[in-house]
Length: 447
Image 1: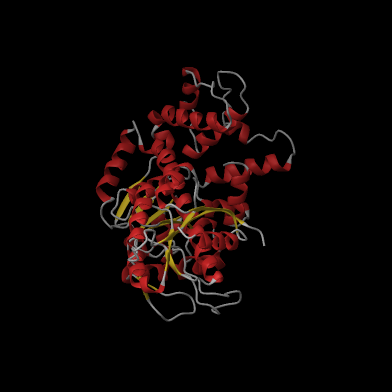
Image 2: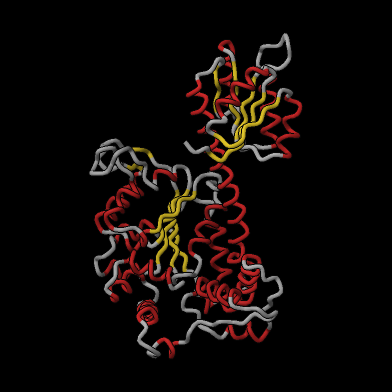
């Protein structure tokens, strides 16, 4: 069995306990450290990266009320609030240990312990620790990377931001409309961060990337045995957002039979997994997004009218990049700094001539296209002034330079996306592809 990359700290004044716990856990984890004096815990944690702490509840002779453990647990939590702590306790202290669980301990182990129980408890705590660290990293990256689209000089975009400020604190359903690449995901996340649900899950569901036979299972979950390969109970993505926010991207791609189920869910706030009759109460806030004309889809009976009116309590139209050219310079500078760091090219700069060139292009792929343009340019530039590699203009897109299949495939995809104004479903249909296949090719060609 391969050891899990994790650092476990055991704190106990009994050398025999330290030895036996270390020998057992060393079989499963790459690093196990021991301390016999609790006064050294904080110094150790400030110098070492630890995933989980096993902490005894009694250290002073003559005192067996477990207060030492509670004191040091609180000290650790002050320094490392997210660090899982497992308390080691004797039978007589179980009630105190249960109280400690309410105050932040992740588990408690009875002495003498069962080795399998000890491993299971520590392994779970390590998984929790990793999840917390990833979440913190994601939050830090999210704050840094999303800010660029939230700062704007554009009047149209300022109007959108003002509307978001007003609607975010409410639980109203929000429908974000806009072309591909305009930043709908970033704005949905911003709404969540400004809401009272900001400390709860934000679950993004891209309906355009799911195959139709997976829609219902992924969204609503299923009961074990509900269908072939349903080997265990599965909570769907919407259920996993309990108390938080669900962002349903590309809502126009939702099949009609599931539109009915989603409408019922939004109205009644009750969710039923596939193969189950039990209704589960749901407390989530919904944000929707699409680049499709939903009014037209309603008139063509591709989208339910009652669902449309239910999801657009507040409707926000996100301007395309060509409608906010005042922001191109700042966005380009942001992407330049990002990729200068990533590719270790600190001396590159965008001069006024290059900025003017960026501002005179129409950017049909919006912010995403600008992002890819700057990244390519940074990668292929060696001099101080960046060599700007602008996207092909329309004339070169329509000209067959050679018979290379990949080049022609990219040209056809660009033409289809432009023809249908970024609508993935219609472009895929025109090209004779599934949505998922078109998404894969767009990713391949960085569109």
